[in-house]
Length: 199
Image (cartoon, rainbow, N blue to C red; front, top):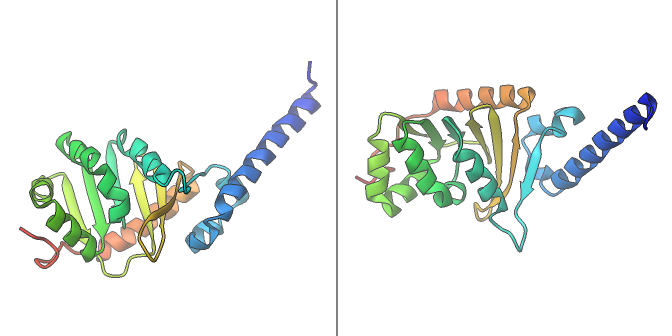
């Protein structure tokens, strides 16, 4: 039977192993992280789950994101990007039909893509009162999703827009930062122009 000292050491070792695992996962995507995230404490990092695309599993980050999307009752996203949202379009449509309040703030080119590629479905979605799309010309290079109490940070390859990694957490510090960032850009965003939306 372990002593209290032994239990404390064992618990400390488990925490250390968790931190090492998190550092290993973050190492490959560190240069893509927002500056504010890289400045969070080690304790906050330990509350993050990092899902990285691998050569034999390129959709791991998208699948992780979709699993949260299927369960959420609120959804706001800053720069969701085509590569992240297109595979989840059926789930998004179902959420809208279920009455979930959704707001997406993205670049005009992304809106143009969806309206030109899925004109009927996109028109149906934007005509719902619980679905809002806004556009902004100068978004950060990463995405920020707010799904209930969970924050999702999506990291994209800048040359292709492919999803490189998804970081998710319910850490209050990250949630506060994400809410602030989202509110700033949403406040500056505007409804899509006629050139972005194909009727």
